[in-house]
Length: 167
Image 1 (tube, helix red, strand yellow):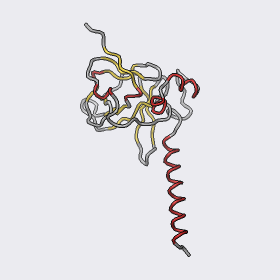
Image 2 (image 1 turned 120 degrees about the vertical axis):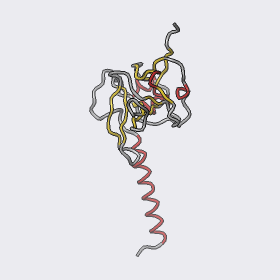
Image 3 (image 1 turned 60 degrees about the vertical axis):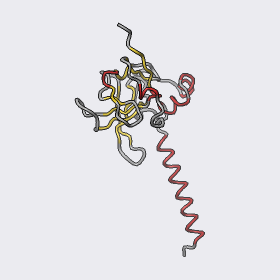
Image 4 (image 1 turned 90 degrees about the vertical axis):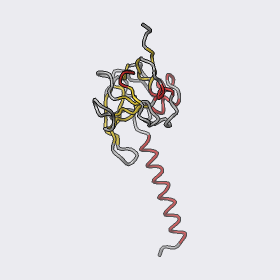
């Protein structure tokens, strides 16, 4: 027989299990399991060269809060590079204002990124990572502008911006 105490205990245990599962789903190893990258480092080495926010996004597949990255409003000509290994990943020529609160691009630079399936957060998305170090950059969606129709929604903290040289 189910009484109030049993019911409430079951709800509490279920909530803890769900929260734990959600938290574990958020912390995955960088990029696809077993993938080999040109640049590999130990967790300690990554923590030494990255800020805590960069580590959370690039290595733990976290997401920065929308609207917090200055790179979302960056309008100068230049190149966006991976904050983990400095590989150029996007050109300002393909950046656009998606209104999402994250820097968005309609095309990466050639041979700059890799993708993998991300099934966290109760959905299936396409994750974008740096092809050289495996750092998590963001996700790509099929609701972007022409000519590709893609929206590469990137975490600004996962990138660095280098302005183009003045002519």
